Length: 125
Image 1 (cartoon, helix red, strand yellow):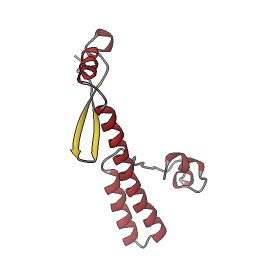
Image 2: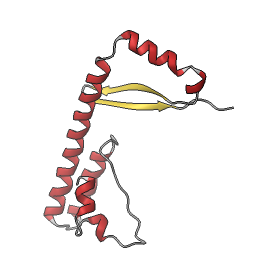
Image 3: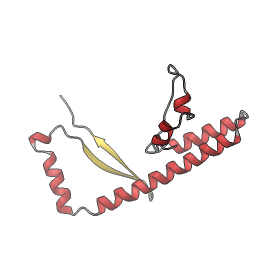
Image 4: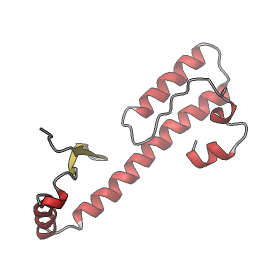
């Protein structure tokens, strides 16, 4: 479910959880999330869980993958719009004293439709 929809719905899982109950949230930006949701749905179904809840979980896993693919396309388009001069300017600016503690972002490609970003944090002595 979309975060804003989940919070607005009084019958949502998060809103029906007990105040002292432990909850765990998986976000679509986590590459492991769709597989984890599918595994949960499989185990829930094997325990006799409600078919509509299984279907909702499987749909959520698919929507997570679609969100990741759309995000990857947006990032790829933005990166592709940068000229080599822009990249050089960003990299040189990073080493200015006022930006010395700013993290850098590197691109990691793990497949055609999977583009993720990692932050490299500066070393501290």
